[in-house]
Image (cartoon, rainbow, N blue to C red; front, side):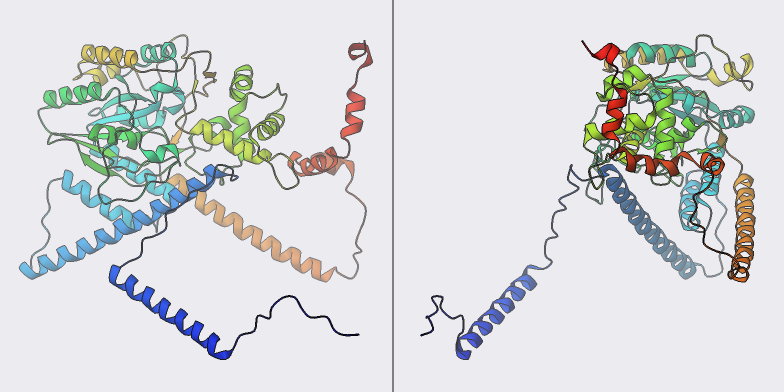
Length: 545
């Protein structure tokens, strides 16, 4: 039998033809390289960004922003080091035997402090460094602006810092109610009437940059002016500071303090009308003090966020801790926030069915938002992270009711209240506040979630607390290592006598285990026992007709 001919043509070619093709390809590539050399550098590819369908999009964006922030800080530090070296060379060249003169403490001293602190920031504990920077800001300023989140003003107040400012007897303390567009007008007026009995209070809404909305903006040499949102309360704050400066008859310095994510840097950018301070979604971006001259007579100083004491309630720790969601346990933090919110309004806001436990709510939210793990099970931790990021962000609307009666803190009395209000035009401030409240378009009372404020949040100002905690943790680690060594030796010695036990732990130990360890078993069994649970839950007396 004859072999049938192949229908397909052979792909073989002669060596002459193959070498000719290879030569033409080499010449084409050489031509492209020459053209690229003439044109110069190639254009970088545009970053496509993170798609909306990607899981943990907000966490990825936060990490990218933090990475970008670190790179910017490194560049600034290198630039400052180069400038210092050049200045030293110039001084040595002009006057080799001369020493640097001691100038008056003012704007030059503040600029030198910022340069030195950036170099030391890596070596020291960041929390300890925050306390040092905060103390410098309070010591250098004549007026201190304590920025409060209008959604929870009482929870944003730190009694330790206020007491330190009151005891100085030479400084003035002013409260700034930022993010006032996220609360209903009636609630804002109630908080203003409550707070102005103690201290001068300014209603404010800062302009926000593109980074606040979670978008990655390109790094430029000169930051453009903030134009995407209108600022309210700027004129009232300017007038207040200008009147105080005239009564003092000298140039003043204004320090801005507050807990993380209340909008300290955004207020400075709004007053300056330029993006001079770094702002972003992630908490605790500002790490060192930064002096920004508003005009010849007024200099404003940005400060790092206050450090929250671990003795506070779990809700205060979840809302005010300057840490990323990866460092905080998401289920614990989100459950603490959820426990203080109005259940009925939360159900309407997130459009989920009624729930009994926080875990059930996060399961329903994950199903609603399409957050799933491998195998199709709902991502409970992802839903908890989502709730935590929304409540600590700058777009979610919730409000707290002001206390029924005014009770001043123990460090306030009639004389201190009068001293704090001295030098300010309060009538003009009231008029500006009324105008700002009229102009701001806040949400309706029905659409805003009611939240129970956990009262004032305690902060840490003493550096010794961190030193003692570091020593304690070091000793604890050494003990753990010693115990681990002993247990290893015992296990090696008693290897022959011991036998592997296949029995499960007794009921007493099983009851003492945490709920998290049993959660995995319950979720694994839930798919198998779905049918049986439905049969048991059926009630013939009510459902059968």
